[in-house]
Length: 274
Ligand SMILES: Nc1ncnc2c1ncn2[C@@H]1O[C@H](COP(=O)(O)OP(=O)(O)OP(=O)(O)O)[C@@H](O)[C@H]1O
Ligand SMILES: [Mg+2]
Image (cartoon, rainbow, N blue to C red; front, side):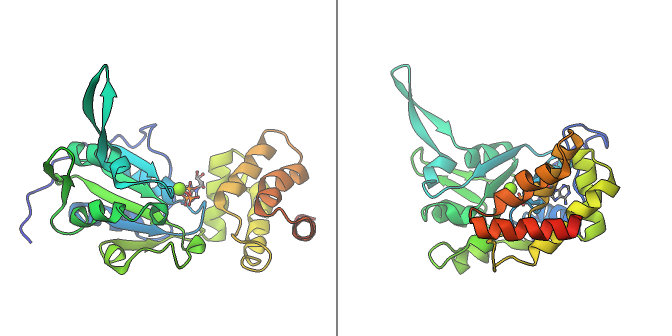
């Protein structure tokens, strides 16, 4: 492959406040950097609250790339990404969408829950996510070539996928893919302690409870307890809420609306936490 060298990106200071902490579970940081260097698009899959968004914001900060995040929903169309003509003071002006801005500025575009978006989104993504790296703007007649530093990353949660909402193979096969899962016990304890300010000894039983509840996924509960929820519970405890109340509000209630399941989960919590 014949490549123009990447522009030099100033390395942000190690203690830069705007780079959120990210604890790696494998070589995903290295893989991200190499994918960016080689101009390959990236797909992150994994359960809710497993660190996908955190990873992206961390990497964007580390590489000094402007980040454009789009939360996809079932009404999101190609024009929401590329841009549209808007009326301003009696005149129509073209306003770039987040994808177009990321291309023009050579940034990182992150499309969260990509499977939710409307089908016409694939039409703009395809030429941009293969070796052409082109973004055609039909409405303005422009054909933008993505600069070297531009990168696109998408994510989805395979847990929610159904037959109607799945990525087409021709879309999937345009992305280098990484699977995310919850961190191993000790690392998850360290992350929750760091995020919440609660000490590790107090966090450990919460993580043990979450790990126990995760084994019930698919039986009584749709999704396992996310790291996000453990951080919520730990934060409430650090703020002075009694542990039992924090666990109920931040871990058990968000998991189910079924009174019987809730009672069962409370019992599991009692057994694990004592
Ligand atoms: N590896 C990690 N390093 C640091 N913090 C983490 C990590 N994994 C999870 N967290 C914590 O969990 C929270 C939730 O993670 P995040 O928002 O990245 O999940 P997500 O995978 O994007 O979930 P969703 O699919 O619901 O968008 C973060 O705000 C952070 O506090
Ligand atoms: Mg996310």
